[in-house]
Amino acid sequence: MHIHKEGYKSIAIGAIVFAVLNLLSFYFISSSLPIVSLLIFIVTLGTFLFLISFFRVPNRVLTTGENLVVCPADGKVVVIEEVFDEEYFHDKRLQISVFMSPANVHQNRNPISGEVIYNQYHKGKYLVAWHPKSSTENERHSVVIKKGNTEILVKQIAGALAKRIVNYLKVGQPVAQAAEYGFIKFGSRVDLLLPLGTKVNVQLNEVVKGGVTVLATLQ
Image 1 (tube, helix red, strand yellow):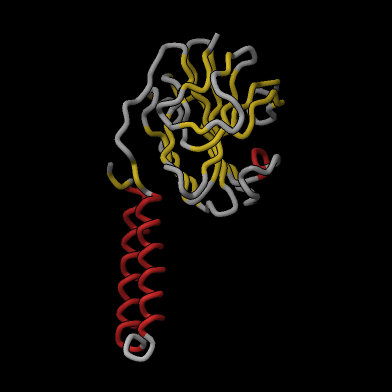
Image 2 (cartoon, one colour):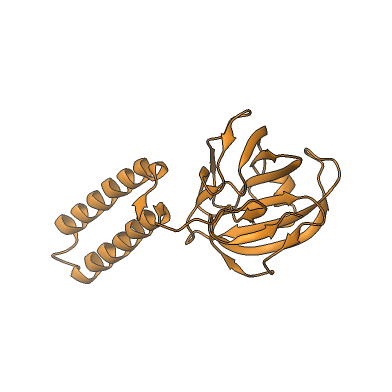
């Protein structure tokens, strides 16, 4: 396991805040209110360790396969349904959505290999990530990856806590299945828009792992 590069700045700031708060607590509170000083230490240490945990990237054996759609994010499957896509396809697609809690790994991975043919950032709201309208109204970043005649749209969606979406892809760029393509900070979700008729390999509320779980099989 290692720490993601997107976490370096946040962890450094967290370490400074942790040190300053506890130094102040030691000098001004510990002698008169030792229990309060201990509580401050426990709470700040727990918060700092959680911050480090948020940016973790575990070592994994990644899944790849010619017709497989690999999960782009850790979390829980919250949507499996047909939807009408107004952004890119302008027709019906099969949507699979994965909700990421703050406790999940937040690195995002390519569901298939192919070429990036569309990349668009959209400003928006910060509705809770499981809200039905978060897919179309929240801050989001959409990417379409084309492999042969198949096109898949992957949408990073900000949630109520997530205020920054990081996307490393560019139009015309070739990408490898299960390789990293982005990161979302502090709670969010990822939507996949697949061709109708795609075989779904997961169920609602199933816990999935980015780069490991096979969400669907292309027909």
